[in-house]
Image 1 (cartoon, helix red, strand yellow):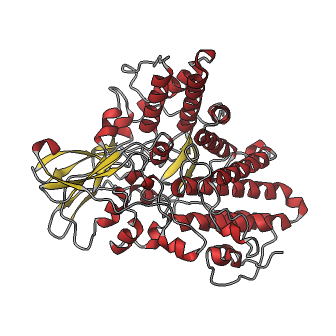
Image 2 (tube, helix red, strand yellow; image 1 turned 60 degrees about the horizontal axis):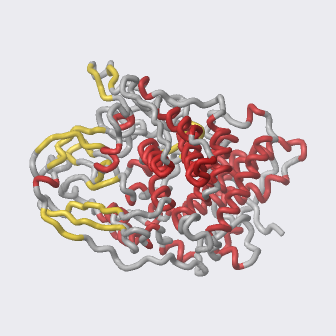
Image 3 (cartoon, rainbow, N blue to C red; image 1 turned 180 degrees about the horizontal axis):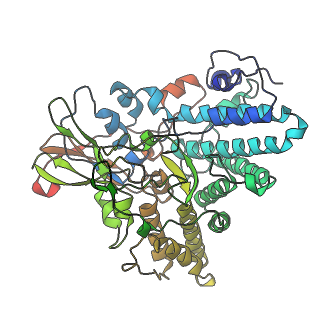
Length: 539
C-alpha cells in the first residue's frame, strides 16, 4: 500500500516513504499522472546534473595519482585540514573536514547518493499509474530510473563496501528499492556486497530491456539523459569488477561497435589557440566531457567543482600579495608513466606556470589535476555552465574494459586463447593518443605483462575521473605514500598500507546518526605521518 504522494519536483526529495531512512520533514499532497511529468521530476531529483554537487568530492585525493604541492602559507580563513583529512586516509575524516569548514552537507556522499536513489524510487513507484496510451513514455522514464539507480548503487557499494572480488559477503550498503515507509527493518541494514551487485545488475538489465523496447531514436540522444549505450558501458564495468570477463567484454564490444561514437584523435587538439580579445596565442584546454567537443562522450554528469575544487589553481593574489597555488598536483608516478609522444600528458593535465616552489623561488610548470575540464586560459579556473560537466562515461573506457577482460581471459586460458582481441582494442585506443611519428603498436604476448600494461594504460587514459581509486581496490590494494608539506622546511609522509582497512571509506557519522541500524566499517587507528626535513632532492 502506498501512503504518500508528491507535489512536484521540489517535494520529491523528502517523501514520507523515506521513513527513518532519510528522516523527511513532511508529506506532500499530489501525485502527477502524466508520464512526461515524471520524466521532468526524474531530471530534477534523480540526475547528477552539472548544478548538483557533493559526489565523490575526494576519491581522487586518496589515490596515487595525486601528491601535495610544495608548501604555501594558508590564506586567511582557510584550513587545509579539509583536504588533509581524506588525502591522508584519516578514519575521522568527516569530523576533520567539518571542523576545518567543509560541512557534512558537502562531504556526506553517502547521503547524496541516497537522495538521488529516492528520486528514482519515487518515480518507479508511481509512473505505472500513467494512462495506458503513454506506455512508450512510461518505458522511457523507467529505463532512465533503473539506469540511474544502478549507477548510484554501483558507486555507493564501491565507496563504502569492500571490493566484490575480495569479499563479496562483507557488508555493502542498504538496499532501499521503494519510497514507502512500510517494509522489513532489514531494508535499513547493510546488505552484502554481492547482494548489492545483484541488484545493480538487475536494475541495469531492466533498463537495457526497456531501452531496447523503444524506437532507436530514443535509445540515445545528446540530451544529457541516460541511454542504451550508457547502460551497456555500466554493465561492462560492473561485470569487469565482478571478474566476469566474458560478459564484460561482450558489453564493452557493443559500445565499441556503436556507430554514434568514435575515439577522439588527440592529434587534432591544439595546445594553444589565438585569442582575439587578448590579441595573443593562449593555452588551449579542451573539454573532454562535452557532446559538442568530444565524439567519445556517451553520458556527461556531475559538477565540475566536485572534480576540480580540491585541485584548482589560485592565480589571484591574497591580501598579502602572495600568488596562491593548488594544494595538490598530479603525482610524479602518474606523470612518469606517460611514454614519449603520448599526447595525453599535456592534454589531460593542466601545466600551470606559477611561482610554486617558495622555498627556492624557482618557477616551473605545476601539473594540475583537471585538464579534462573546460578551463579558462587566463584564470585557470574550471568553467561551469549548463553544458559543462565534471565527469562523463566515455567510449575510451569501453576499449579499456574490453582490453582488460580479454587479457584476463588470455591469462586464465593460456595457450588456448588468442590475445589479439586485447591487443587490437589496446592499440586502437593508443593510436589516437600518440603523435603520428611516435606511435608504435604494442605486441605483448606474455599474459602477465599484457595485463600489467592494460592496467597502466587504464591509469593514463582515465586519470582524475574517479576510476583510479576503484581500480586500486580491485587490483590488490597496494601501499600508497602521500607527502604533505608542513612548512617550508619539513614534510610528513603518510602511508596507506597494502590491504589497509581505509581502502573502504567510513560511513559519515551524519548518516550513521540518521539510521541506527547501520554498522560502521572497520577503521583502524588514527593515521600518523613521519616528519622529514626538506632537502634539495625533495624540490
